[in-house]
Amino acid sequence: MKVAFAVQADEGIKSKVFNHFGSAPVFVIADAATGEVTSVNNQDMHHVHGACNPITALDGRKVDAVVVGGIGAGALSKLNAMGIRVFGSAAATVAANLDLLNSGNLRELMVMHACRGHEGGGGCGHH
Image (cartoon, rainbow, N blue to C red; front, side, top):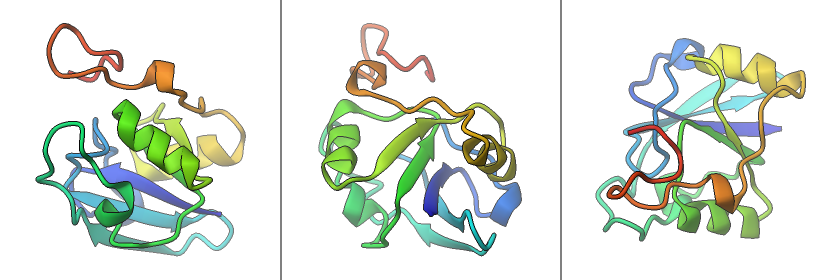
């Protein structure tokens, strides 16, 4: 399984998970089976709020899952429609979250867990 992690900076497996999918500067993509790690700059970082295109952001890379600190409902729905599961991070680093994911200890996010905007409190609590 290939898993994309929204991160602040590319530090490989030690990268810190970023608090929001759409504005993450970089994505670290880890192969859960082999441990191989690659990275891609967010190709859609400067999108209009609410208009994130996850496939553009990931530069067309095929992944099975995404781990994030927060994500908007539109991006979450688009990822789910492509068969990509989205999980909320529960640790600081890619490595720790990958361990949690492999052991079944990360919560899968649903639209009710998504950010509802950057005003009025939002729904993901990362602000």
